[in-house]
Amino acid sequence: MSTVSGVAKSATTHRLLLVAGMLTWAVVGVPRLVEFVRAPSRWAAPASLVWTVAFLTFGVAFWVHARQEGRGRVSLLAVKTVAALVAVATGDSGLDAALFAITSGQAPEVLSQRRALAWVGAQVMGLIIVFAVIHPVIEALVQTLIYAGFQGFTLGTALVMVREAEARRELARVHLELQATQVLLAAREREGERLRISRELHDSVGHHLTALSLNLEAAAHTAKDTPSAEHLRRAREAARTLLSEVRGTVTALRDAPLPLLPSLRALAEGAPGLAVHLDVPESLSMASSEAAHSLFRCVQEVLTNTLRHARARNLWIAIVPTEDGGVRVHARDDGQGTETVTPGAGLTGMSERFARLGGRVEWRAAAGQGLELDAWLPAVRGAVT
Image (cartoon, rainbow, N blue to C red; front, top):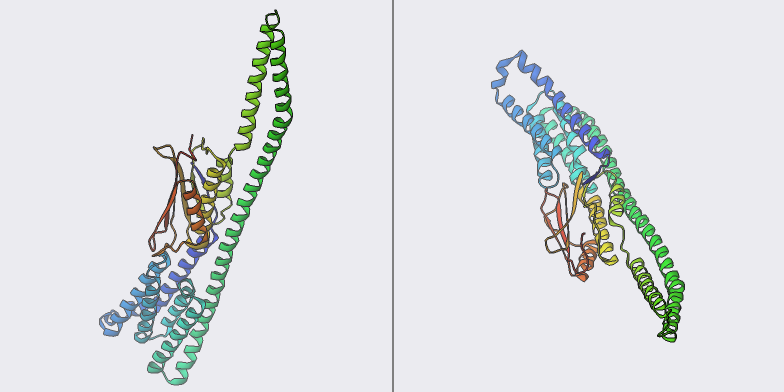
């Protein structure tokens, strides 16, 4: 088994944002904590209890949101927004409004750009309403503008990061396709050289061996019942055997399949930002070029889809022989998953390739659980030896 690891910058950035968000949340709670230490009796005040619940709810929701992929993240964003509004309404310092900078920074992760802008706009409107109830209008406007600026800054930064992440995924996908094209071009070049050699053997050596065999047969017939007849017969048999071996070599050169193991490893190494765990037998070999090419394309499509859609950190691919002599491909990732899978051109083409060889392709998906794929090729057209 070989493991190809990519250094995912997005994972490091994600951890830094998690730490920054938790620090911001903690700093917001420091003034209130100091106040409770100085005057413990205030713990029992209804407003203090409500603030504490809202503050803790925000912190827990942020932690879960930051560590969760896919399902439920919009609802968690709503929980944080409501908790922040409650904290502002029941707090005294107004510093609680800094919590909205955290939600503004997370909105682009789960919403489109337009919806993220609308979400932040709704937060600003809610904030100005709460401030207007607590403070005079001018003071409410000033504080709202201050915290709206913070929200705008974190929102803009988050949008840039999301776009950069999408650009990295697209670049990784293009790089993977280029890597696959290079592997296939190298294989085609080797195949072309094999075909050239096979043609030379067939047209030149094969022709002369055929002529030699015919001449030896004629000579053996002419020298019948002479001392040299036995020697001519042996020479004729040797020429026929050599001709048969040349023809076998020509056929083998023409039908030699794609060298799978180095090709698959080269393909996996071209997946930046994704740890590809490739489990392939060292003796992997396919009985036909078409089967080998279909298997290679299957792995390529799995890698491409994972880079483009899954937002995964790990991808496991296992290619193993089956009991009936066929070969099975099992792949799964730890990405965000989806409720339903709508096959595109890639999955449809993969299914068609395998079906043409008598095999099949199946996939399973669930939100938050990644994508799992099973593909099988029969022993008739492809086998692992």
